[in-house]
Image (tube, rainbow, N blue to C red; front, side, top):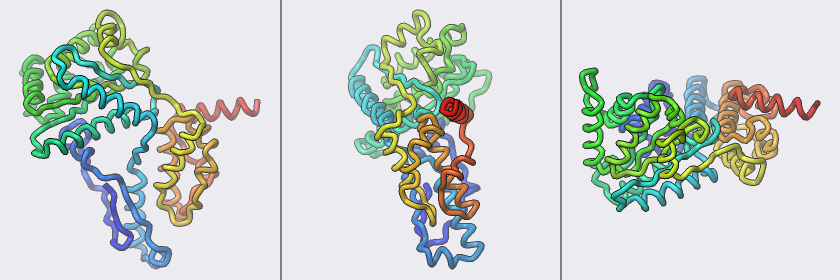
Length: 346
């Protein structure tokens, strides 16, 4: 969290070690982290800062802008609602539990929505059971070129189980993981990057069977996220049909240029902490920002945050279209923008 009143001298945080959310420690930090906050210094005090004070102050602002601001998009709301329904439906289910798959293009907010679903669920569980002995949510990523053993190790790594050696077979690791998760009353399992599991391959089939084993031995709701899942081979063959028959599919995609997009831009604008920024600048550039990013929420976030940091570094303390033009985002968005511009001039 970045929360620093202007009256205090902010301290640099560059050496802070952040555990990934694929460990129980990192996940708990993610759940407990408050939204980033920063209060601008009054103009007189800001101008009176010496070089060291200004450097610390700017470093804290850069930290603030570098932290992803979660926006409650329609995608996040839909995933939260559907995931909540499934966890309630599965609460007393003794047979095959229903799951959820979030599928879409890159930078459309899949991982953000997946993690926010897990965060909201864990906070609800903590409110009901404040003793802290539960692990309500597990978050793992599907291993590249995965195998059953690699998947089991991902779960063991999240839980912080003792070091797994090559002498431990897959069945031993899986059994230990399931025992811990059952005792910890885990209710929601989040599996990201599920497109890496291709059921058209032997390795993918074995990994799918192992994942199915987890779903049948854990009283939990499984939610998956991946890129273009329905065309990645995940629904191939008998195993794919079974997965499709058990899971609801939600699509994410680019946002059209509509009032919701304008609202997203306005929300991001409200997070800026720049001394010479003219309110309404980004709102006036909504159409341009849509062209630059192709309507991708991840690309928009990158562009706006990078522009803010650039404005701090160059001392301009403002964002302009010229400055935004100088910021480079992901190649896919840049290519889309160039093609769009060429089509308009052609």
